Length: 199
Image 1: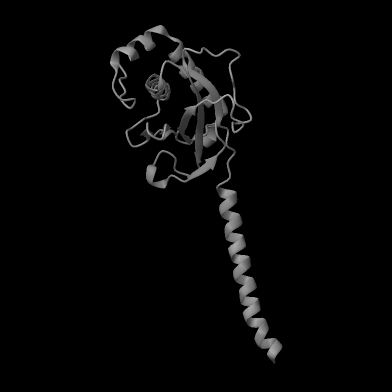
Image 2 (image 1 turned 180 degrees about the vertical axis):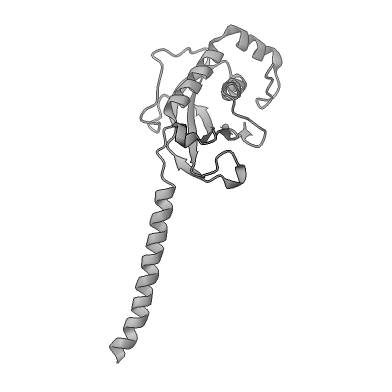
């Protein structure tokens, strides 16, 4: 009788634990994604020039950069979501996704042992320029809704990052910093690094 009385609470506890484990398993499966951050050593005349070039590279890829997502003090930018949905896209082989850029940077210390394993470092660094480590990710989510294109029915599910897109953004950043015209315009401007002029 004591044994029968003890098995009911034990059974209830085991059922509760199994339900919790099942719920956790479902959540982790639905939220799985592979991160593909791209980190490169980038040189610029100063931090303000780098900040503005980074924003322009992101905007040029048609991502929205607002004051809320751009924090010069934290040296980080999180763009708005860029939505690319095609009606009946899955039937036609389209992705129906949204993507956003997550970027950050800090000063490069060549003596530091704490750096990304896949950090891309140029063969030569110009001692006259400031040197930074810039990290970019293009985060993606797929819409698994049966009604793509209707915002209220969207069912966004995390997907793997887009490394090719991150590489393209980094190339844009490098090309902007490498153009004399951009650097001269930035030198004329002055002001805090968060000011962005897209003319």
